[in-house]
Image (cartoon, rainbow, N blue to C red):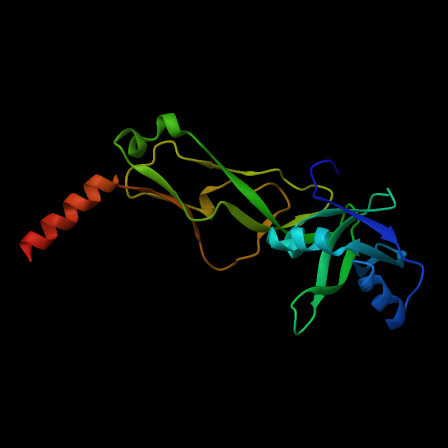
Length: 202
């Protein structure tokens, strides 16, 4: 679990609205971990810690290690309730995962083959449309990255998801279209020259 974001938490013995209000007054957000064939576990997370992870983005699509009093829990967030006025988190639900659980996660894309890309040698640039792709994966077999090969790509060429070899057992959450990952764009100077030429012709 070393590569997962770690959220430190503490066990929370008391349940109910009164206990939850006291937890919030103490600077914590009440939460629960459930699933995985185990009994639900009530916990508390420092409010500033939870806010920091929420602001990082894609919180519900990130595999997390919630350490409860030092004990690891592989989880994914299923719900964060917010105060309707202050928009601050007031409760969170985390799903405990097994090795075989199927979940949606964002996997980063690594671009290789720059030295054998004709478009780049001609002065073009890689315009990245998606730095990461949301995939349906198995929790026990999560790929570290996807590899997009730029070799042989010319100016104007695009790299789509169908051109990337997906790890076995993974599928994109977006189905029905061959969406773009990146393209090889013309140099800015060339684009400006083309625009000037078009303007003169007009």
